[in-house]
Image (cartoon, rainbow, N blue to C red):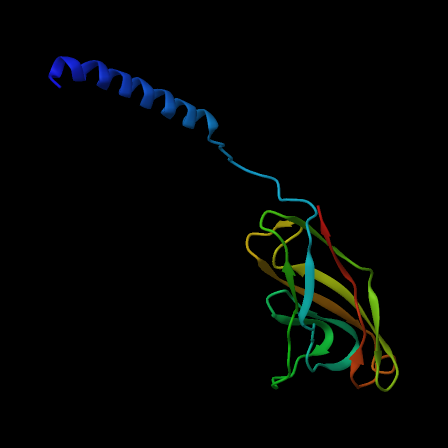
Length: 172
């Protein structure tokens, strides 16, 4: 074959390849952002319990607070001794699809019962994630603190105080 015979073949080949490329471009899907598939499932596990550590009621009343970072503080007649007591915020592990919007709703104030009588009131604090938050990975660690309201020593005798509280994670 000479050059004059090959030229029409090359033109037809270029036209054919151009049509194929055009079809491929038309058929490609482009996604900038997708909604997560339904149904979305959210799983929450308790990894660590809220602990206020040791404190001393030295007068009429006060509060003990553990924030979501684990920092502990007190007001009123509460003394925080320099001893190695365990102080931790609550830690919940939230497992959900990336992009899921979660709202945290703290339950009502709750009472903690003492081993020698008495009741201390607990108010749940804020979380490290804020609310609402968007899940950015397979799991999200949510740290939550709280505040104890401590009455007089006669109303809150020494001892160990225990109870439960409610935190609800709502998938939006």
